[in-house]
Amino acid sequence: MPKKTRNINTFLFFKLPSAWLCGVRLRYLDDKRAVVKVKHRWINQNPFRSMFWAVQGMAAELSTGVLMMEGIRKSGKRISMLVANNKASFTKKATGTITFSCEEGGLVTDLINKAIETGEGQTCWLHASGINEDNVEVASFAFEWTVKLKSPSK
Image (cartoon, rainbow, N blue to C red; front, side):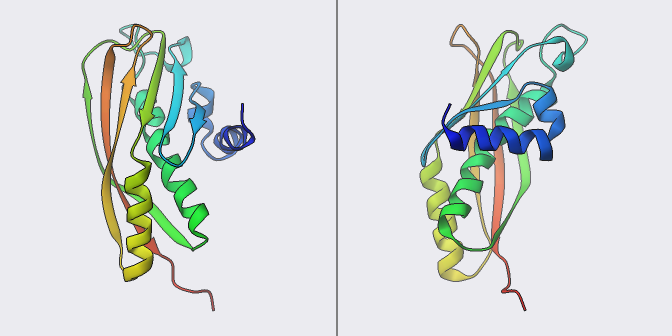
């Protein structure tokens, strides 16, 4: 596992312990794509013996949010980020290992560059798809991310 991926998973342990305890783990990250996996287990199940929707949401959000975090880090600027809205659709019971991926890193780069160029807050929707071990989509999520340059420190 690359060092960057390990560092993000360590970050989860300390800053988002509920996601870490539920088994949410970053498996791959580059400038364009992030992959997060979570396995259906006792601790993250609902009463219907499938994965609780909120656990799927944590994994999906991480797959989009880690692209934002990495884009901000690479910009070298002080930029705040926040989810303003989200939408989700569930099409099949989530059991086994579910892989959430977001492949919209290019949108993140454009968003951050525009925020830096204009000095104004920007928003974009990023999408994550959850696929089970049979390569069937079980859920899809969309997150509206907002970014804004932080004012210089005094």
